[in-house]
Amino acid sequence: MKILIVSQYYYPEQFQINDIAPKLVKRGHEVTVLCGLPNYPKGVLFKGFDDKKSTEIKEKEYFEQTGVCVIHVNQVLRGRNPLRLVMNYFTFACNSKKEVYMLPSDFDVVFCYQLSPITSMYAAMEYKKLYGTPILFYTLDLWPVSAESILKSEKNPLMLPVTRMSQKLYQSADRILVTSRPFIDYIERVNGVERERMGYLPQHAGDTMLEMNLLKEVENGCADFMFAGNLGKGQRIDVIISAAAELGNRTDYKVHIVGDGSMREMLEKMVKEKGLERNVVFYGNQKRDDMPSFYKKADALLITLRGNNEVGNTMPGKLQMYMTTGKPIFGSINGAANEVIKEAKCGACVQAGDYKGLAELMRTYIEEPEKYKDCGYNARHYFKEHFTLEHYMNELEHELQVLCDKRH
Image (cartoon, rainbow, N blue to C red):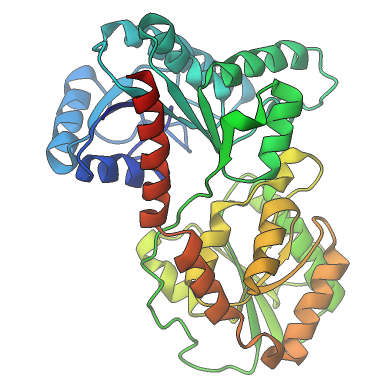
């Protein structure tokens, strides 16, 4: 197959599409990626993309390494304020749509790696209008509900045009794959897409830690819990800190928070206000290669997410990564992630926002860790059955091939 991938974000920005595109090439397909100039998450261009010539050199180097042809279109950089972010969304949508007219007409299928914003998918719709090429949406971020966090309220009058735009884009897809089953209900109800046109394909995760021994090197007589990932508003790390406050200043537990994000300063202030400096430790961002050494500090892992709308029903890719470590997982989370943790028997869950329930799970682990002794094994076993890159690629390739065959 000759495949056009549309994604506003691509290498060297860190998203899983970076694994998927080269893997499609290795499976014998011709792959072109249409994306924006890399500047996520800091809003600053990555080194080597500062002018047309240097960008072309980077694209050539990447093609020689992976076989993936990458086309970067210009866009306003994200910056650090809402206006710049909206301009970033708008300029990529416009410029990628124009770039479509410069592309060959013989792509067999368009694969949309749909993160936020959904406006990034306009180029795919334009290509379909021109050549009748079928579109496969892989929906990782749900619209229009995701726009609520940008517009501050579902009652904002701008939500109506955003909803209509989302409906138009989703309905342009020939097939939609979702990362969480609850997305299917929402897309059918709000965007008017028939259930028959949708399917479930959870994200894969890297398996580099799957066979590692990440048990503590030295037992310290303390239950060490860890959260690793983005410290944003949606991740609700405040629930973890509130749970720690419920446990109090006990000396038999610690919470390690690895990562950075917009809420870090507020969270650190919250820890100080609650007098939890000895129990909650922040490490900031860490290199991916260094993460195994951090997971070795942990006895159990924590996962939280907001639960006030359909976005809270998603299954964060963090869950799959956690499962490869072979540690029990405790969550305050709804939807698909809650279901998977229970189905895999790899830990325990309470509803999103339930800090008292999370504190009780942590207390049980502190006092009765043997109760969860099989959870790490169960997590890795479930991962091998459902979340490897190979499993993901088999399903994705099949879906792309079906669309291609129908067209021809």
